[in-house]
Length: 29
Image (cartoon, rainbow, N blue to C red; front, side, top):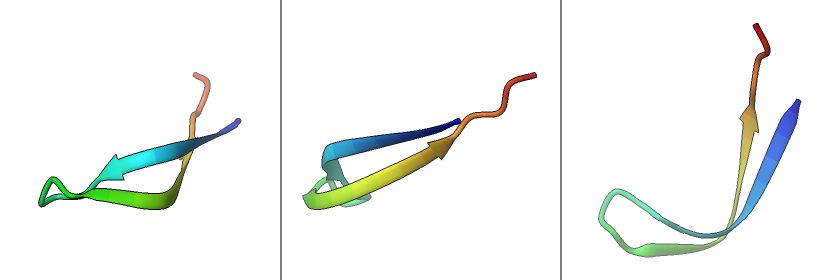
């Protein structure tokens, strides 16, 4: 199961990072 989240993310310095896509892989127990 792969969940893609698109939006405005903030990096470690707190600045908004645009055009970022995070893929989260969830494992079902």
